Length: 321
Image (cartoon, rainbow, N blue to C red; front, side, top):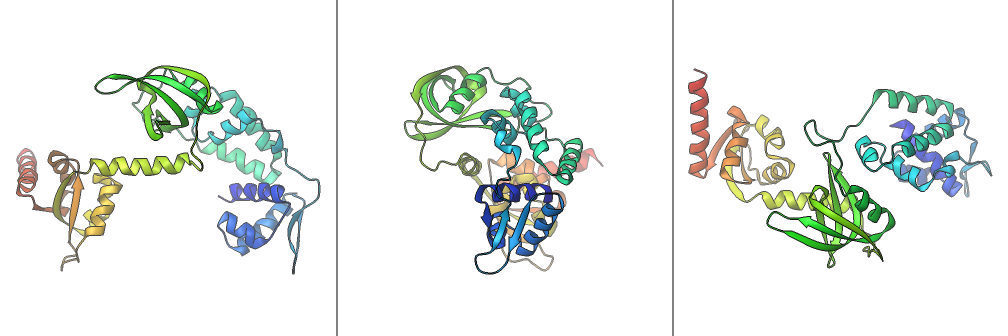
């Protein structure tokens, strides 16, 4: 959105004091022409910046001018970062801190952007948890978040499926996924994920936690989630799909399985149908998913899956005769 890009440009200029239009374009992933339009918008909004052409030229802020964002505290910056996920802010006890941070940000904006930000808050809201999930934060969230914020080791009592275990962890980050909190932490130099609702007790230690150089929580979580999705796909089948069924395949089997199927797709026949190799969790899961494609699917193998899909189709036909 343009408002967020203009704010990013202001903060970039404040940090570096002088940049070229090409530098800004590369940083914000826009064209140089867009940068010049944004400069004009900021100047019209009252931001004291000017440009110089030719060798050694660039975009400059008037010396000594700064936004009031310098007044943000550490907690306010953290709350602002989480501001798009209200449940996360509330669970971590940062609600009033977020209000203070947002007030400072609104105050530093030029009038044009200030009005845009106010309209955005009036019209858009993000609610991360699902409708029917638990609304109470996990009992150990306060202790775990304290360990994450302070970079301290933590001892936990964790309920696994088969037994309860004790672990000494190096916390690396907290993730809120669809209303459920997870701790990403290192145990014996291996990074693992722990569901907070299964942590029965947590003690924050005085020892500093070890953090791998260059560890990126978002990048690790995305890779870990993809690995987990792929690990579930153990059942192979071959099917023919209509063009429509292939296009919407991700809605019934998930993005990972659908992507693998598209990569394996053969050439289209005269009707546009294509044979693909499909991986799912199990035969009963495959049956349930493929029925969702209605008349756009034909099972080629194995025969048992073809028979299962046929049986469901016959039962549906009988019930709706």
